[in-house]
Image (cartoon, rainbow, N blue to C red; front, side, top):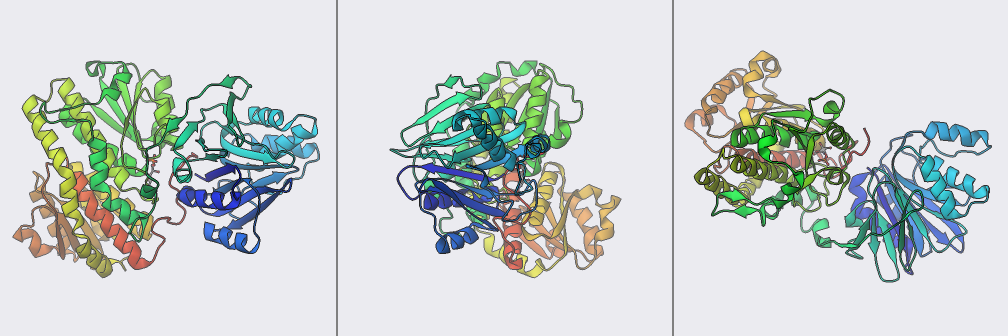
Length: 609
Ligand code: AGP
């Protein structure tokens, strides 16, 4: 949710911290702050709003020092304010934190009873207060921090340092991520890899229940109980430029255009064209034959949930296994029938979404096999899963998901093909045709991207509307939902997605001459039926915007706009149809002047329930 950055070395810390936070700004952005150790005393600068505000403050009130921590915050406790922004100081201890301390009220009461005064409404402040309290009882900094983290319940990733100790940063984590970047005579701590890529590619990931002492010379990892932990560094291959905007006006537009490459990267090394099969050795970790699996549960949140809805169609068609799809926030509280013959497939871009993580844990505890589809290496969800099918979309910075979505669809297609072939439900010839169609998709996306200008014009023509309706049928109904979500997220226009056949059961009442109705109309067995649904829209004056690979005269007659896209096999059509909807949402958002990459009230990764 929030961005964390820490630095210890011999360079000016505040600059490195702000630059790192800039790369993490997508994680949270209602306030920001940094703290550095200057002449044995920690100084803090915090502001409400974006990092630009913090930078302005640092320009007028600079911070020296070569050791420090920085944070961008998305409020969970207390409103966005300078006082609630991180870092939080108590006595000589200063802390930044991601996550939620569930027992903070209890801890706070006990600390207040000891005469401590709190200065914020946050749960985070109990951490610095606790450590400082333990130090005032005679513990040294490390022992005090260890004692404090053992008292905390909930999810946390923290970085902490202290006035009297020039030599180290301490970091600890439970459910939210911490990565430590290893440099030469300097080291870094961050909540996500892009923050440190400009400086190093050698990283260490902390596991739950671990803390690390980070000095200029090295890193000591141990458990909360003080047991030393040996951990090999890993090398990250992401190019820092991929985490920047390139020539595009917004990350969102860049990420929309990165989709051909993202899909190629997701297929890379996995395609066996000759055999009409795919190669997914990572699934061996599941330790089971697919013939033992009677039911698959697909679970996720938001956009990733829409990918699951499409996944149900593809898996059932190719693998002929019954599939249930649940919002992770619902699945975790109902009583699904999990067991050794069920497979939970959790889909998540970030791999940190709290509800999806909880669903994974429920399923694993109930004996189900768990496979995750994820974009972020070693995130919490993959770490809790038996096997992981990584999408290779690269860093997705814009809050609204685009390339992560279409790579999730690609991964679900790969998975379905794999299972279908393993179970003998797809023969080699059919497999070859399906692989061939998949391999062609990146170039069809490239062609679809050329419709940008037309969509920009459409956006200007209809962008003033207060509501949009999106219609699709069958496997493309989830894409109508996704199109509506995209528009809502970034343009703040109310939008609803519906299966076209459901329209006459209620939503038809909404249709008037003001309502743009975006309809997905690939040439498939539902084409004629959807067309007849559209005639009802036309009869009521609705403005039809059709996205189709079959611009028939009948359609041209009733639609106000027709966007033609290339033809794909029906199980891949959802990928292609998503592209114009992403661009439409993008250009409407630009027309309305919203904050495209960081829409209000949203965060990239929702690590709280
Ligand atoms: C997508 O545009 C959204 N910002 C959101 O719905 C997102 O897909 C959802 O929060 C799930 O995130 P995850 O894929 O990182 O788990």
